[in-house]
Image (cartoon, rainbow, N blue to C red; front, side, top):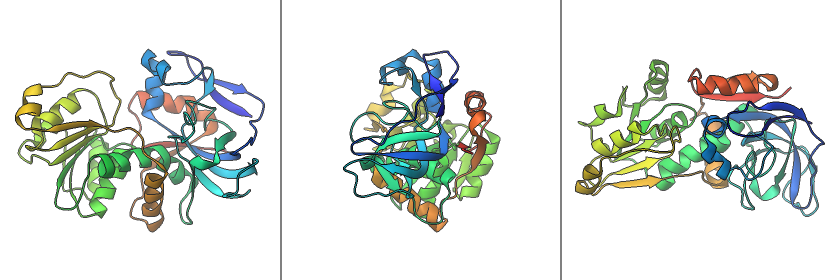
Length: 316
């Protein structure tokens, strides 16, 4: 098989050929149809701290995977050849694709059957790939970690691959959503999602004082600004990893008795809920499709902030 391999920080991904993976005990072999590109891949390529997260190198990256089962390994009874599936990037048996085993920037992936999520009729492979990490992580942060519910005022920072899904899911549930993004294109996208108002800077939410703010950007100033404008007793959820260090003002955190939470990943249930919203048409994320051969250039575009929505590689 061919795949885009990560070796170490500040080195470009290499297009390599490797022996095909196998459908061993409890695993299935998936013919990859789509793989989502994520800002965390940029982080892994530029920040040495990610080497503590990646289980081994070299490794083929790509943790947003959707495809068709090509082979079923011993002990797998819930799936069969031909099933369309997404792969939960938060594995139940270790590190997930792109971090613990060769991921989706490749022709084939061998994944644990317990991590699979069936694709419902009516969604594309591109949507299914984006729904794994971008969908799962955004949905989990908004509704599980953040506890968003109708009647709340919710701020969403970053209307990118994750934020757009979370914002739309909240709007569908009747929640007043206030979107924040530095990009004019992203702010226009937010309006199309049905949010109540859009802003360029989180500090502009001061008069609104949201009950919950979910930071899908995580660039330091976004999180500190969220703490400054959150309502008394409110919650700020940090998801984005634009920067791995931040300075915050502790006095509003203390005097407001506010809560700052981190949220990472989610589970197959979150992905399944996002897939339902996609299948119903309630969520139709903005996706830019590229080819397998364009994956490295796609990651560089992410780094240069040239992508609106989610970037997904479609395999030939």
